[in-house]
Length: 635
Image: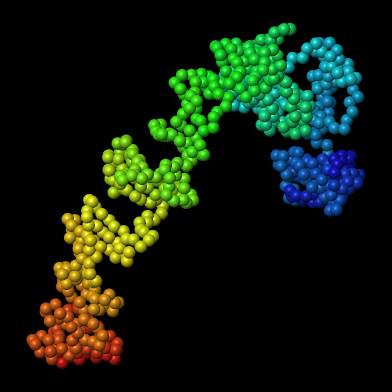
């Protein structure tokens, strides 16, 4: 698609509104858009009412398929630069050359051209003020720098830009426009990140002068380390390859001003030498050396005075033993002077260290590991033994753990733990609290000896045919005994069959009692009796809002063979089952009594009938419900 301008292109249109203009054909003496502009080309157009006020100038595209002009851009119009609405009448449509797009002479100068493309300049030399060089050859001051045939330039000096930065403990990011010379001052460390190497040309160079008291770190464009310039240091960094953002950077360090070299001396200004190999003369002790050029094999170097060293077997006064070999089983020890003794009561033989006494007085303040500890000869052998302590005497054989601290959190404890054990879980603890131990519950009582388990069950028992006994106050009689049949005795008594345990308060042990000897008590709201006292589920329950007082020896008679009977008492603690034909009231079991006043709701359900001796009075607010087909007979 090209911009085409042609002379005498004019057609008409009929009311295109604000849309595409459909052309009606050329006017006499003019050519058509098809011939002048051509299909799919753009052109500057004018649309104007014939005899009307509407007009529009713009850039449009002509399409021959429907002989039309698409209005792409409005340059000016009777509608304030917007699309004009040609809603009626006939319009002229022709190719124009808008004033806004025209190039023309004004006072001998060409008006602004915008961008010129595909042009060749054949006029006079263009001056610097107009974007040119002003010369066809260059030399002298204020001239354009030109390269020779070998692309070299000769000049007296080149002054490169300089940037000074005060260190702030952060990162300074350089770009393609950053200064060649970078100086750092201040007291903090600083990081410089080099530009993205793909934006630079190979050979691009930066100078870093670290005049701060901290380190200057140089990273590449991806923040990867390139070099470290210490305080007072000076480095040259140059780009060797710009194929990646990181680039490949060469680096050289220059000597700082504090370091001076002469033909025979070098002053390092107090700097530290690292990563170097010394190939000079022997360094004396006064300069941090040994003053030695050789050493005795398998020997040490030690001081013989404040200014000299020697090599040989390290004596005791220098922290050694003074020996070159040791006797088998001999453990050296001090003889009270500056040497070790040749004999000792402390010996080592057959994996055993022998000594008259071990007395450790140090306080363990860190995690330690120990090997096996054995005292005496164990009377049997087994696997998995990491320590054994054996004695034979007609008295206490003791292993004592004592905590002498009297603080309110002090205790002495023996701990066992398993594979899940930590300092707060899966362990067993046997210990004793200190005299002022403070806390809640029995485990925290002062002076209490305790045994408990954490994160697991505490099991007390025997694995052979033996019982368990509990004793208090060194009593001759067990407080409680569990024998091998799992029977439990209190105060030495197992009681008898069917006996019940009765508390005697906190002044003495509970005792076993025959049920007949247990004093009567009361039951509130609910009391359940089971048949013959055997706990069967077919028992009788007494429920009520008031307490039921029952004698302690009340036992229900057997229910077998007594269906349909009711429970009665002789008034002397004896219960029996009585046929429903009798409910004795005055010694005559043939008289059945009923109340004459009904004070609550009553129901004769399906499958039931009822009878009463009248008269009967039903209380206000109550009712008696008789199921369908059932009867209530009042005599």
